[in-house]
Length: 275
Image (cartoon, rainbow, N blue to C red; front, side):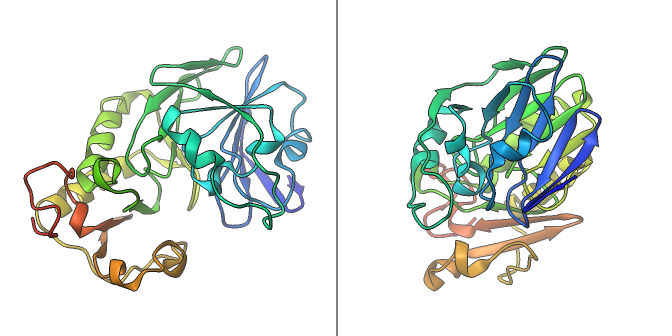
């Protein structure tokens, strides 16, 4: 369905993914009584008005994390559910020239285990901190879909945000994926925030292998090749860019900082980039 500047596509009869023109995918999940919006993106049209062309159900809104490309249309909704550590990110940034409303929404903190009951459809919240400290995934029990934000997608996963104990690490990413692997029999398809949706859950296994290769000492290339990764935007500091690598394995790309492969307080030389 078209409604410029957005396009909605059905994953199944009660689930929409929205193309915003190359940025984050918002999702609309329809239950018998309520609808759930997962991420609001940063497109150039009013997302709430667009979703109102698809459903007249009352909408609940949540974010996979607080980065601006996932949250900039939060401001057209009254309340948004998110992890407590995502709230600062979601309220940050100067959007005065972005044609997007300043986020005046009320954040509602949620933690691991929270369940959205949409009426005949239950969406479980899973804490998956890595890409950012406030990362969440959402498991749709009835439809066997897993909504993964930026921690799992076909394309690249970016593991270089943050510093110190909150910095993203390859080991942290592997821990998150091992946690999700324990729920492998509970979903069939993965719905990420970028680079195509949905895709088969087997990509989870490929990313685990990629993480394990990096942690074993197989260093990625310094060529950050990705059709959807604008290097100058995410890494404007050329000095820092020297430490960033891209590990390509099967259908996965992992972009990480070699100085933060393990946790910052580990015993693996994370400060000097050695393994």
